[in-house]
Image 1 (tube, one colour):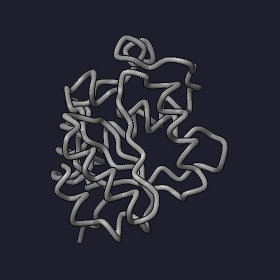
Image 2: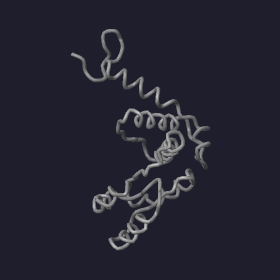
Image 3: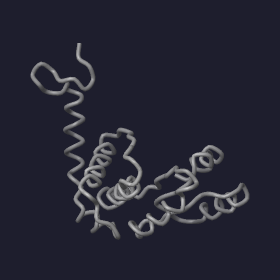
Image 4: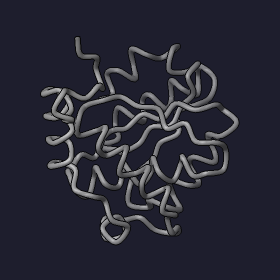
Length: 167
């Protein structure tokens, strides 16, 4: 009996895994930093492990697999994620909107890094008390387009129906 992820007797991955791996690789050619710069990445030079992380995220996207980027603090998860958004917009013309859920304590950091690394992508912070969010909802209904929406998990739960309609 074969297990998912195990190799077959011929040393190859089982058919469905080999197909996923091959299709994902064909669609997601290696992301290069110069391409990211051409598409709008500014203000940072990605380290090799960060670029590898961007490529891994892109491959997961192409294979339609969810994933968690679980590096330790300070290794650049934010810039890798922003670079993925730039890749999706530049290479695939997929401009979102993308939803970022993070703790309230880092919302402003996300906003600053979006402005610094991806000034061509519009980023909206969706936070505040109930009345402030009601005003933001009106603004977002009138705003034609944004690429990234930043909010917290708690606010996402409270305003799930509105956020779902903002796709």
